[in-house]
Length: 231
Picture 1: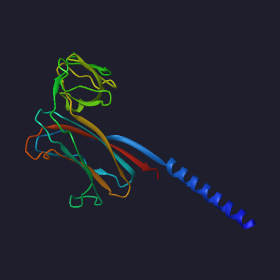
Picture 2: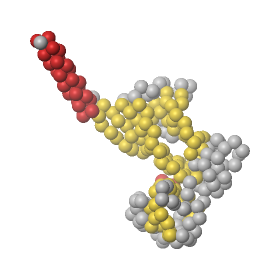
Picture 3: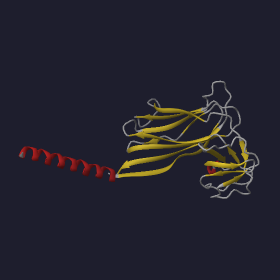
Picture 4: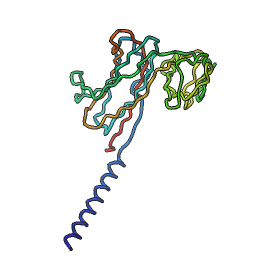
Protein backbone atom coordinates (compact mmCIF):
# COMPACT_ATOMS: atom_id res chain seq x y z
CA UNK A 1 0.00 0.00 0.00
CA UNK A 2 2.83 2.39 0.90
CA UNK A 3 4.56 1.61 -2.40
CA UNK A 4 1.38 2.42 -4.39
CA UNK A 5 0.93 5.63 -2.42
CA UNK A 6 4.57 6.63 -3.06
CA UNK A 7 4.26 5.84 -6.78
CA UNK A 8 1.07 7.92 -7.09
CA UNK A 9 2.68 10.78 -5.20
CA UNK A 10 5.74 10.76 -7.47
CA UNK A 11 3.50 10.76 -10.58
CA UNK A 12 1.58 13.77 -9.26
CA UNK A 13 4.79 15.65 -8.44
CA UNK A 14 6.27 14.84 -11.87
CA UNK A 15 3.09 16.07 -13.57
CA UNK A 16 3.15 19.32 -11.59
CA UNK A 17 6.80 19.87 -12.55
CA UNK A 18 6.00 19.35 -16.22
CA UNK A 19 3.06 21.78 -16.07
CA UNK A 20 5.16 24.34 -14.19
CA UNK A 21 8.00 24.04 -16.74
CA UNK A 22 5.59 24.36 -19.68
CA UNK A 23 4.01 27.46 -18.15
CA UNK A 24 7.45 29.07 -17.81
CA UNK A 25 8.34 28.26 -21.44
CA UNK A 26 5.08 29.62 -22.86
CA UNK A 27 5.20 32.68 -20.64
CA UNK A 28 8.65 33.46 -22.01
CA UNK A 29 7.59 33.65 -25.68
CA UNK A 30 7.26 36.99 -27.42
CA UNK A 31 5.56 37.60 -30.78
CA UNK A 32 6.73 40.40 -33.09
CA UNK A 33 5.01 41.26 -36.38
CA UNK A 34 6.51 43.61 -38.95
CA UNK A 35 6.95 44.17 -42.69
CA UNK A 36 9.44 41.93 -44.47
CA UNK A 37 8.90 43.08 -48.07
CA UNK A 38 6.46 45.88 -48.88
CA UNK A 39 4.32 45.84 -52.02
CA UNK A 40 6.59 44.90 -54.92
CA UNK A 41 5.81 44.46 -58.62
CA UNK A 42 6.80 41.27 -60.47
CA UNK A 43 6.55 41.48 -64.26
CA UNK A 44 5.19 38.79 -66.55
CA UNK A 45 7.76 36.01 -66.87
CA UNK A 46 9.91 37.38 -64.03
CA UNK A 47 10.92 36.04 -60.62
CA UNK A 48 10.73 38.05 -57.41
CA UNK A 49 12.35 37.41 -54.03
CA UNK A 50 11.59 38.73 -50.57
CA UNK A 51 14.24 39.93 -48.17
CA UNK A 52 16.30 37.17 -46.54
CA UNK A 53 15.01 36.68 -43.01
CA UNK A 54 17.17 35.65 -40.04
CA UNK A 55 15.17 33.01 -38.13
CA UNK A 56 18.07 31.61 -36.09
CA UNK A 57 16.61 32.83 -32.78
CA UNK A 58 12.97 32.24 -33.71
CA UNK A 59 10.89 29.58 -31.97
CA UNK A 60 8.59 29.73 -35.00
CA UNK A 61 8.23 32.03 -38.00
CA UNK A 62 5.07 32.88 -39.90
CA UNK A 63 5.04 34.47 -43.33
CA UNK A 64 1.89 36.41 -44.24
CA UNK A 65 1.84 36.59 -48.05
CA UNK A 66 -0.54 38.76 -50.05
CA UNK A 67 -0.67 39.25 -53.81
CA UNK A 68 -2.96 40.28 -56.66
CA UNK A 69 -2.79 40.18 -60.44
CA UNK A 70 -2.59 43.55 -62.18
CA UNK A 71 -2.92 42.43 -65.79
CA UNK A 72 -5.79 41.05 -67.83
CA UNK A 73 -4.04 38.19 -69.66
CA UNK A 74 -5.23 34.66 -68.92
CA UNK A 75 -3.01 33.38 -66.11
CA UNK A 76 -2.34 29.74 -65.22
CA UNK A 77 -0.96 30.66 -61.83
CA UNK A 78 2.06 32.01 -60.00
CA UNK A 79 4.30 29.71 -57.97
CA UNK A 80 5.25 30.76 -54.45
CA UNK A 81 8.19 28.99 -52.78
CA UNK A 82 9.11 29.23 -49.10
CA UNK A 83 12.77 28.33 -48.75
CA UNK A 84 15.11 27.89 -45.79
CA UNK A 85 18.86 27.59 -45.37
CA UNK A 86 21.19 26.51 -42.55
CA UNK A 87 23.95 28.74 -43.93
CA UNK A 88 24.32 32.28 -42.58
CA UNK A 89 25.24 33.58 -46.04
CA UNK A 90 25.47 32.51 -49.68
CA UNK A 91 22.88 30.91 -51.93
CA UNK A 92 24.10 27.33 -52.39
CA UNK A 93 22.21 25.86 -49.43
CA UNK A 94 18.61 26.96 -50.01
CA UNK A 95 16.04 24.16 -49.86
CA UNK A 96 12.28 24.14 -50.40
CA UNK A 97 10.14 24.17 -47.27
CA UNK A 98 6.91 24.32 -49.25
CA UNK A 99 5.50 25.63 -52.52
CA UNK A 100 2.00 26.45 -53.77
CA UNK A 101 0.22 27.93 -56.78
CA UNK A 102 -2.09 30.95 -56.57
CA UNK A 103 -3.60 33.67 -58.79
CA UNK A 104 -5.16 31.40 -61.41
CA UNK A 105 -7.60 33.00 -63.83
CA UNK A 106 -8.18 36.12 -65.91
CA UNK A 107 -8.26 39.24 -63.79
CA UNK A 108 -10.81 42.00 -64.25
CA UNK A 109 -9.91 45.57 -63.33
CA UNK A 110 -12.41 48.23 -62.35
CA UNK A 111 -11.93 51.90 -61.63
CA UNK A 112 -12.96 53.19 -58.23
CA UNK A 113 -15.55 55.93 -58.69
CA UNK A 114 -15.32 57.40 -55.19
CA UNK A 115 -13.68 60.83 -55.25
CA UNK A 116 -11.89 59.97 -53.09
CA UNK A 117 -12.38 56.59 -51.40
CA UNK A 118 -11.73 57.53 -47.78
CA UNK A 119 -9.95 55.40 -45.21
CA UNK A 120 -12.43 53.21 -43.27
CA UNK A 121 -15.02 53.26 -46.11
CA UNK A 122 -16.76 49.89 -46.52
CA UNK A 123 -18.53 50.59 -49.83
CA UNK A 124 -16.57 51.08 -53.07
CA UNK A 125 -18.33 52.69 -56.02
CA UNK A 126 -17.72 51.18 -59.47
CA UNK A 127 -19.68 51.35 -62.73
CA UNK A 128 -19.27 47.65 -63.61
CA UNK A 129 -19.28 44.69 -61.20
CA UNK A 130 -18.55 41.99 -63.79
CA UNK A 131 -16.19 39.48 -62.25
CA UNK A 132 -16.97 40.58 -58.69
CA UNK A 133 -19.90 38.29 -57.94
CA UNK A 134 -19.97 36.86 -54.41
CA UNK A 135 -22.21 33.96 -53.42
CA UNK A 136 -23.36 32.86 -50.00
CA UNK A 137 -20.38 30.60 -49.34
CA UNK A 138 -17.48 32.56 -50.78
CA UNK A 139 -15.97 35.95 -50.08
CA UNK A 140 -13.45 37.41 -52.47
CA UNK A 141 -10.10 39.08 -51.87
CA UNK A 142 -9.80 42.21 -54.00
CA UNK A 143 -6.55 44.05 -54.64
CA UNK A 144 -6.53 47.86 -54.70
CA UNK A 145 -3.54 49.11 -56.72
CA UNK A 146 -2.68 52.59 -55.55
CA UNK A 147 -0.56 54.93 -57.68
CA UNK A 148 1.80 54.89 -54.69
CA UNK A 149 2.39 51.14 -54.64
CA UNK A 150 3.14 51.06 -50.89
CA UNK A 151 -0.43 52.28 -50.27
CA UNK A 152 -1.97 49.33 -52.13
CA UNK A 153 -3.98 46.84 -50.08
CA UNK A 154 -6.24 43.81 -50.11
CA UNK A 155 -9.86 44.04 -49.01
CA UNK A 156 -12.33 41.22 -48.39
CA UNK A 157 -15.44 41.64 -50.54
CA UNK A 158 -18.70 40.51 -48.97
CA UNK A 159 -21.34 41.68 -51.45
CA UNK A 160 -22.32 44.02 -54.27
CA UNK A 161 -25.01 46.11 -55.85
CA UNK A 162 -24.89 45.23 -59.55
CA UNK A 163 -23.02 47.83 -61.60
CA UNK A 164 -23.07 50.26 -58.67
CA UNK A 165 -20.71 49.22 -55.87
CA UNK A 166 -19.09 46.43 -53.93
CA UNK A 167 -19.11 46.11 -50.16
CA UNK A 168 -16.15 44.96 -48.08
CA UNK A 169 -15.80 43.38 -44.64
CA UNK A 170 -13.53 46.00 -43.12
CA UNK A 171 -12.94 49.58 -44.14
CA UNK A 172 -9.99 50.36 -46.42
CA UNK A 173 -6.79 51.17 -44.58
CA UNK A 174 -5.67 53.92 -46.94
CA UNK A 175 -7.50 56.63 -48.87
CA UNK A 176 -7.52 56.17 -52.67
CA UNK A 177 -8.13 58.80 -55.34
CA UNK A 178 -10.71 58.72 -58.12
CA UNK A 179 -10.08 56.03 -60.77
CA UNK A 180 -7.66 53.99 -58.67
CA UNK A 181 -7.78 50.42 -60.05
CA UNK A 182 -9.00 47.37 -58.19
CA UNK A 183 -8.41 43.77 -59.30
CA UNK A 184 -10.50 40.68 -58.62
CA UNK A 185 -7.85 37.92 -58.45
CA UNK A 186 -5.94 38.08 -55.19
CA UNK A 187 -5.05 35.99 -52.16
CA UNK A 188 -3.83 36.25 -48.58
CA UNK A 189 -2.18 33.26 -46.90
CA UNK A 190 -0.11 32.48 -43.80
CA UNK A 191 2.65 29.84 -43.73
CA UNK A 192 4.36 28.87 -40.46
CA UNK A 193 7.94 27.59 -40.33
CA UNK A 194 8.80 25.67 -37.14
CA UNK A 195 12.07 25.80 -35.28
CA UNK A 196 14.80 23.51 -36.59
CA UNK A 197 14.36 23.72 -40.38
CA UNK A 198 16.81 26.54 -41.02
CA UNK A 199 18.40 29.75 -39.79
CA UNK A 200 17.39 31.90 -42.78
CA UNK A 201 14.20 32.01 -44.82
CA UNK A 202 12.87 33.71 -47.93
CA UNK A 203 9.86 33.80 -50.26
CA UNK A 204 10.47 33.32 -54.00
CA UNK A 205 7.73 34.46 -56.39
CA UNK A 206 7.92 32.59 -59.71
CA UNK A 207 5.82 34.48 -62.24
CA UNK A 208 7.28 32.36 -65.04
CA UNK A 209 5.18 29.34 -64.05
CA UNK A 210 2.71 29.71 -66.94
CA UNK A 211 3.91 27.16 -69.52
CA UNK A 212 2.41 28.75 -72.64
CA UNK A 213 3.95 32.13 -71.99
CA UNK A 214 0.73 34.11 -71.47
CA UNK A 215 0.70 35.53 -67.99
CA UNK A 216 -0.04 38.70 -66.04
CA UNK A 217 2.10 40.96 -63.91
CA UNK A 218 1.41 40.98 -60.19
CA UNK A 219 2.07 42.84 -56.97
CA UNK A 220 2.96 41.07 -53.72
CA UNK A 221 4.02 41.80 -50.18
CA UNK A 222 5.30 39.73 -47.26
CA UNK A 223 4.91 40.31 -43.54
CA UNK A 224 6.81 38.34 -40.92
CA UNK A 225 5.71 37.18 -37.48
CA UNK A 226 8.57 35.99 -35.29
CA UNK A 227 7.88 34.04 -32.10
CA UNK A 228 11.02 34.17 -29.97
CA UNK A 229 12.08 32.89 -26.57
CA UNK A 230 13.03 35.67 -24.16
CA UNK A 231 16.55 34.99 -22.92
